[in-house]
Amino acid sequence: MLTFLHISDTHISGDAAYHPPWIPAPVVHPNRGAELLVEAILALPFAIDFILHTGDVCADPEEADYQRARELLQRLPGAVYLLPGNHDSAEYMESILPDGQKLQVLRDAQVEVGGYRLVTLDTAGQGDIHAPTLGDEQIDSFAAALDSAGEQPIIAAMHHSPVETGVPWLDEEMRIQNGERIQRILRAHRDQLAGVFHGHIHQQVVAQEDGVLYVCCPSTWSNLAGHPVVREGVADPLTPGGFNLVMLRGGRTFVRRFNLPLIKP
Ligand SMILES: [Fe+2]
Image 1 (cartoon, rainbow, N blue to C red):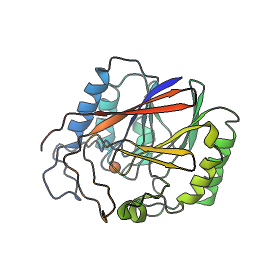
Image 2: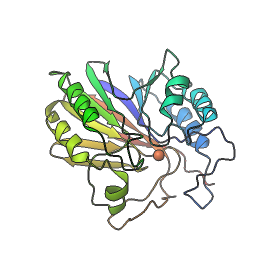
Image 3: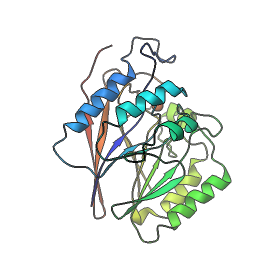
Image 4: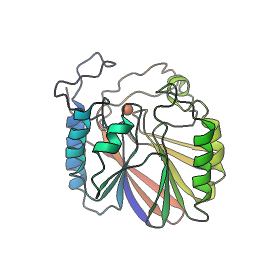
């Protein structure tokens, strides 16, 4: 039995005037979303075992961004596992965020959490930053990490998704280009896999393929459209920021979305 929160794509910035270059319209500052996230989590009326952040912790690979992220994320309760995304600097993440207590950076890693094996894959910084191609060595070590779990139940996490969706923009520009290889490895463990938790696409998405559940939680700050004719990243201003509650009970995975207040720029 495990209860955790899945958060992603906070894009925290040390620049008070930060505006993402890919959104021409006025947009809420990402730190506001992160502040609302912290407030919402602190107000939850139940205990959680840990928080999983699936990457794009910060907006830019700047030291000031990580200092600000550390201040904000340290307010969260319990252990916070942080994966790098394509906007992150792995170097600053590893040198600034870990606090020896609650904030832990996981790249290609595995940790024991309440009887589950959390196995993470660092998909950031491999070729095309939005649609990476993973190398043989990394794929093999991911497979070995899953194998080493034995009979234990597994939670898998990564920033980019390996699955095809049918949304042209997501499939051509936002997924792991050799994702089929990752899927094949995950599929071999489907009987013990609670789910694959990812970010990157800034949408609330659930996909199921060959008995493997793939879940993306929304960004806390700016969400994007996803439907059969989306060919590029399009802001979805009516979708508020949010996070997911994940409850694992026996072989069941229950995911519940929590919305943050919809704030206008
Ligand atoms: Fe992102």
